Length: 199
Ligand SMILES: CC(C)(COP(=O)(O)OP(=O)(O)OC[C@H]1O[C@@H](n2cnc3c(N)ncnc32)[C@H](O)[C@@H]1OP(=O)(O)O)[C@@H](O)C(=O)NCCC(=O)NCCS
Figure: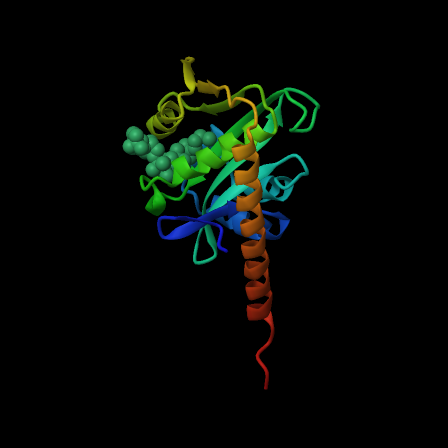
């Protein structure tokens, strides 16, 4: 069984063993993409620290991987409350796809996983914020029927993920089971390729 296939690659949940791959994906984002993703200019040091903090118990991150390299990510975390995800409250999502892999449906595939994860954790509202000029994110949000509110320098999209269903829970479980297996194989492959060659 393989994690969910996507154009040229696959989408699977990222785990703490993927921290370096996720960090390197963020570091490959150009200046404009970093600005769009984080709402401002961010340095390499910021991104390194950010990636290190991203695999908390409460975080759900899906990655788009091509040949084992993370080329896109969708992130979900609780926001505005002290409750872990799964105990209600609101959640926020953020997305990043590297330039050469855009406009092929990867962002949409990541968003579908994130909305399902928010749904299964009973989030009451899922927020996504971006710059008002971010047409790509606005299109993505509209595609999932999110309500878009434009403010002077920020746009906020909000959608109601609905409650979990048997299908959404089973879908996440089976995707994550397959994805975890693939992640362990990737880890094994990386560890193996780092071993010194036999003499
Ligand atoms: C936003 C982002 C994740 C979209 O990723 P993607 O893989 O290109 O998304 P998709 O290919 O699934 O496209 C989703 C929809 O948006 C539309 N779209 C994508 N890029 C667009 C653009 N630049 N202008 C207008 N519409 C755009 C697509 O046509 C598609 O709609 P459709 O299916 O009805 O045709 C990507 O552009 C990105 O990483 N941007 C930089 C970081 C960022 O802005 N993150 C969002 C804030 S957290």
